Amino acid sequence: MRAVRWLVIVAGLLFAALPLVWMGLSSIKHRGDTISQHLRWMPAMEAPADPASSSFEATSDSYRDLATVHAGAQHSFWHHLWNSVVIGVLSTIASVALGTLCAYGFSRFRVPGEKDWLFFILSTRFMPPLAVVVPVLMMYRALDLQGTHLGLALLYTVFNLSLAVWLMKGFLDEIPRAYEEAAVVDGYSRFGAFIRIVLPEARTGIAVTAVFCLISAWNEYGFAMTLNSSGAVTVPAYFAGLQGNIEGMPWPQIAAGALIFVTPIVVFTVLVRSHLLRGVTFGTVKQ
Image 1 (cartoon, rainbow, N blue to C red):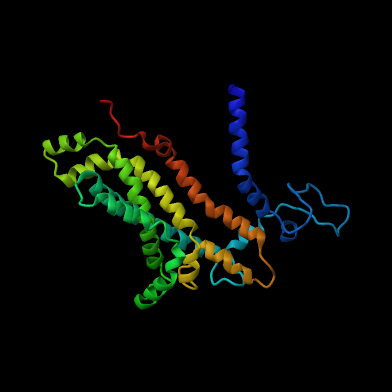
Image 2: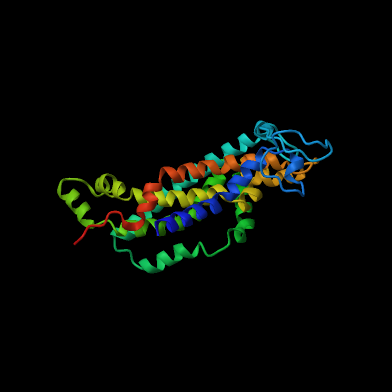
């Protein structure tokens, strides 16, 4: 059984990692090899006998070319990656902070019509975001927020807030109120007990919520294309803009950029993996 378990784990890992491996191999190919009809996996160790045949030689040019400005783009890949980092981090921090405060209110206080309010908050996730793209665009033009980091960060915060509230409420409900009551008896204020007692116990929920909010903001494409034809263009919109390249899509550069683009998410998820594994079991006490 142990061997079967490891076989299933390794097979699942290889299947999940296959897209990343393929992007890594594509990033070290020449463009001709990425669009070739003949499948080539690894770089050839020596040149082929027929010079007219397609050769696959490992190259790092695609990574160096990320610093260049391609046709159809206004800045290099690194500029757009920085836009994604700023917008993703700002919207994630705002979503988690506001969602935690709102969820704490629903979890600890009696709110008239609590179920109706929670359903209303959840219902905002039912609506396709692009259904409101026209009024949002008109509002952003009136407020001069289109093409800015703040504009997209606010928009992503609004759409991720419902997810943050529902996730954090589930985690906060599992923290016994006795912890806060004991802190209040010891002289802490309600806010002091929230900061010193509740937040440390809820760090697992905060980590899980932050991962989902960051992934949502990191990969968002529709609003990034609509509201940022110039200015704070994120990486997904940058990749789409490369379709106007006269020489064709630079697939090796796109593969290299995509590989770098997913790295922060993978690193962040690995850093909080212990909290993700704990799930909703944190903060419970046996009665």
